[in-house]
Image (cartoon, rainbow, N blue to C red; front, side, top):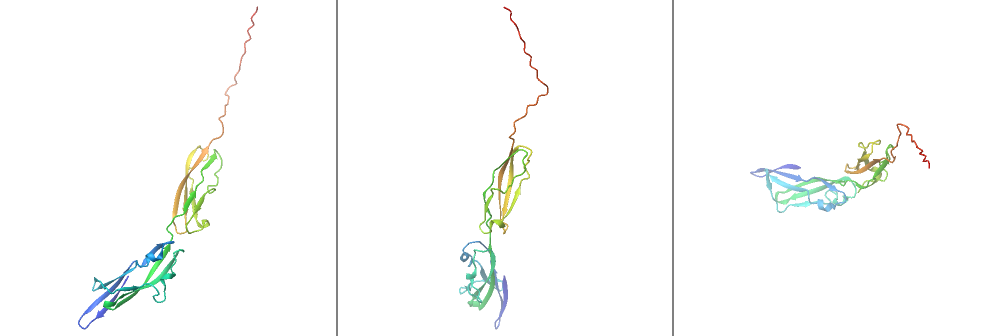
Length: 207
C-alpha cells in the first residue's frame, strides 16, 4: 500500500512514494501479539528509487487514539490499528491502518474412537457412541462430525474401515479411522438329506 507526494523545490520537482508491506496479518490464537507488532514496514521511494532515511521512526501505539494494546489473541476476531511512519530527512509522514486477523489454525483433537463389533445381521449401531473429541477454541457442541461407513456390509462378515472427520467453526478438520467388525456367532446347522437307518444283526451261537 502506498501514496504519492510531489515535492516542488526552486528548480527541482521530485515524487515521493511510501509503500507499506505486511499490512494485513494472520495471528494464530493465543500467540504473543508483540511478536507481530514490528512486522509491518514502510519504505520510501523518491522518483521510483528506494531511499534510506537514517532518521526514520514509527509510531505504533496511540496513533489517533488507537491503541495497539487493545488486541487480544484469545478470541477469533479482526482488529484494525493505526501505524504512522516518519521520514524526517524528507519531511514525509504517512499513516497506515494495519489489519490483524486473530485466527484458529488448530484442528480438533480426536481423542478416542470406538472399536465396533456387531453380530451378523444386526442393525447399524450408534457410531458416535464412545467418540471423544476436543477443540482448542470451539465448544464440543459446535464441532461438526461426519462419519463415513459406506464400506460396511451388515449381512457379510468381515472387518471394515469407518472414517471420522471432525471440523471446527474455522474449518480446521481432523481425520481418523476405526475398525468395524461384523462377526458370526451361529454354529453351522446339520441338515439330513435322507433318513439314516441303522440295522442290528443278531447272531445266535448254539452251544
